[in-house]
Image 1 (cartoon, rainbow, N blue to C red):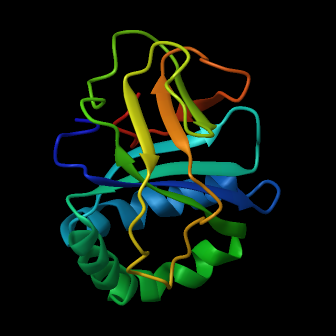
Image 2 (image 1 turned 180 degrees about the horizontal axis):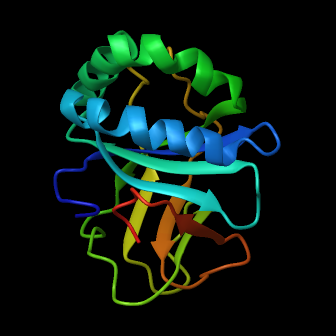
Length: 181
């Protein structure tokens, strides 16, 4: 399972971590945060190390709607699991505010084709310059969960592909729990 037709809202989250602490956050994240967020209504399908940036953790979280996003985030971030582990998670992070709130471009969600490699490209709005298996654009709705900021300096296009489609493409290495591979 990766992207699905049910994903109408997506967060592309790119965290800059303190040097040498990425694996610590990934281990905590995969052990404590995946199932509780899924139970609250989020779909966590992409968890990655950035190959180009050794202190960057990139992840994808999808929702059925803006309303379900708000409900899922309230349930998780005001709940006991986050309360218990937030200090440990936050201690690994320098910046967690590089977040794009996105929606799929019509008909763009497909299963990744066979092969190796996952690349993400963030660009000004434009058609993808090469083959992609998922294309997104900035979601224009207001952020209904302001406790987690999202970028407002867009609009953007975001593409996922098996090979780089531009000089801005970033290679992602799936973690052990990533569904998108």
